[in-house]
Image 1 (cartoon, rainbow, N blue to C red):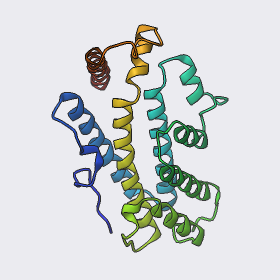
Image 2: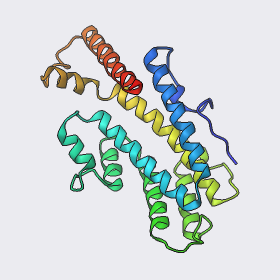
Image 3: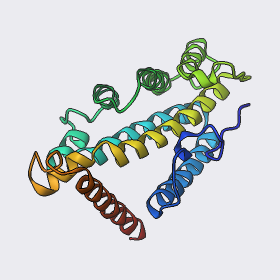
Image 4: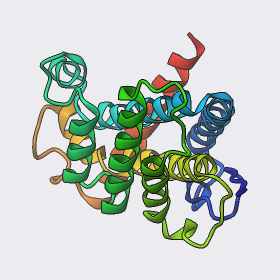
Length: 228
């Protein structure tokens, strides 16, 4: 069975990360969440593992969207209200692809995961497990969305599922870091100044200063929230 760790050299989350407090803080938080997620996932029954993994990934997408969208009542309504446009797993998957937050392969993988969850959630056969032919096929499809895993061999469909989930979770940690760090800065600066041209009108040095100030403020907020 493939053993995956955030310390593996292939993990993108560690690439190009300096020793700044901001980056170290993010990595530490990511490692802690990674360990807790994997430990609980491995202890679950087949049905529990499928539902827990899908729920966790839906939460990750919600977390990414919440970080990148404006901190406004409309954002909470979209993500959490029963009639909100982004309150379902499918809606979150679709909007993340449309906005470029996930790749096509990740989009496909999330849909395979959603189908696996639905099979377990709506099948009332008490013996239903990863050994079911349809579930096994879906697990193989999930694995094949990641080129890094195509040559890996697993003994059971459950091992295929967990190995794929572990690898995919690492990718989303990396994606969350990249998106939060680089993608929204210009828009957030414009929001802070209440001026849609605030960022584009800055010179190169001024942009760097504003970006640095923004990141320091945002991560200071996150550190303060974690201490509460």
